[in-house]
Amino acid sequence: MVFSSTTEPSTSHSVDANDPHTLTAPLEIQSVLRNVQRQRSLLHVHVPNSVTAMISTVLDVNAEQNLLIFDISADSATNKRVQTASRILVEASLDKIHVRFSCGQVSPCDFEGKPALCAPLPQALSYLQRRDFYRINTPITNPVLCKVPVQENNRAKVVTLPLGDISGGGIGVYDDNQLPDISMGALYNNCEINLPDVGVITVTLRIQHASTQELPSGKTRVRLGCSFVRPSGPTLNMVQRYVGKLERELIAKRRGFG
Image (cartoon, rainbow, N blue to C red; front, side, top):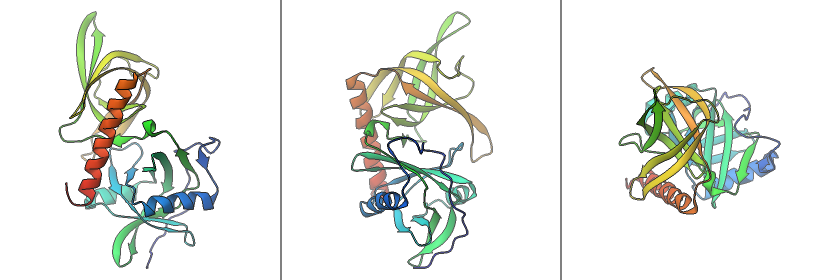
């Protein structure tokens, strides 16, 4: 195996080092990552404050060189955007346990004679046994839509927002100055989300955060992170069924069946 990398040690900002579910011992982190590698669990790689994301798998955990080696994307433009980011956020599911960590800057490398990507091993890793918090991107083409009833100038109307991701804890949506209030804690009741092949759920959403993201075209859009407020058991079951459906589609696509 030949590696080529000039990355610096990573700084993890995506997990809380004081959280009891966070691992900070290098050997424990490496053990989890090697299990992710052995099970060929899908990695969901995100660039913070950007719509850039990719699906990958762990190729190797190299403790001697402090490197996590993972597969490249089939899209060269995505690979370039991932490499220009100062850090990446990575999520995976391991035996129904949510794994989340942050790595420093990504560099190209060779693994067993084939092109790959590498980054410094994470210094902290969240290992949370609650599948309902596992976040997965929703389709970009034919996006899932969330219909939000709002009041504007004392008149009722419905705002339609495309989803960016979903989990049992909530959704990420894109808003182009449509909602009247996007401040943290703002509540929106009776929001309808049509989950393809699963059904329609009705939820109350609380805005948790708002951020501006840059699109590949250079334009920007506002992304809102929203949590579900006291969702019912049937609603959570439908969300988890939809998340499972998306995961199966990603695995099939990764194996060349999609």
